[in-house]
Length: 471
Image (cartoon, rainbow, N blue to C red):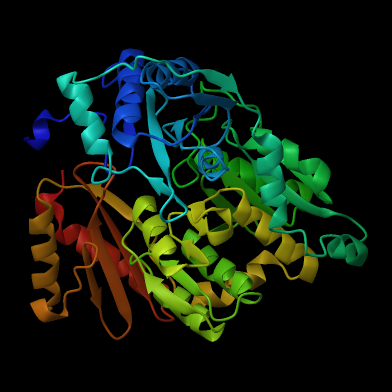
């Protein structure tokens, strides 16, 4: 089947598109019905939804489709994406579907679909290669079957169990040490971006000896302060920085809409690139798990590899994308995996990603040691500066690769094509890859050794070089 004839909501790792242009509640019903037949879950499917205005109706339609296909459902209501991962790993649950478009524009929506893999005892993400294409074909051809005996739906409050799971990550840490040493609680600016994260922070707050300064905390699918995406929403980031400076907070955290990613700001209000957080968390976790394996993506690697090796761990390289990383984490029994895009994966969270666990770990680290967050990452930022990810549209990705390789005079034998192209030189390295989630988009990342100017200069040089193929 030609790619152009596939339904527009089919993406590499999930369902995503504009509502109702690309899909609607009728399509959501059919996706639920197709999931029932393709996945054949051996237990109820948990369903949750994010704060988008279209999400409740889509979730109801998905539940109806699953029930029509003979599958029982457990409705979790408004929650974060990691609820789906947590729920899927609970005894007796066969799968989970989260209705969310994360950080996409306001009128978009989508689904992240997972299933319990009994053989591997792990949560398995449905991807284009593993389930989604088969679901799309059934929906597109209307080859859908309803069951003789419909499934039934029940409401399920997953918050208590999920909350306990999060707190497990910091139960053995002296969280009161900071307060004893400074005469005040650790202060954290928490910017929910009007997404769903604020609801969970409110649940955690009574169990933590911290003071929270809350910014854009009310869930609002109208996104009055722009779409919650700290990588692009400068208005929201400025509010985080100002709140840190105004209140003397010890650090800040901001989340995307479905809070499966979190982003950090140090006590000066400076944004910390996700790349350096990977090394920080890896070092922290290896302190109590010596010799464990740590996964990183191929876009920026030098800092992570150095810190993991120094901490006695082993690095494992994975292609970018949550489904690939989760698959490899299970296969290699990896302790922790991190992407520079701020996805963080934990063995003790079902090998899945969480936007709550990382900030709890960072808070525990600062609270128990008193060392400022800026001091924790300063050496890494200075030793391995990076360009920041540059995203741009192209009309010919293969020509873009060729232009870069020819321009830099690299022999084909020296081109690493593990994920896009990675080229390594004495003082700098780069990765250029096609986006898996946005058709026609490419991502460029550059890092250097001890030269903050070099990555910026090289990024400018290569972006200028690629003008003939940029859209």
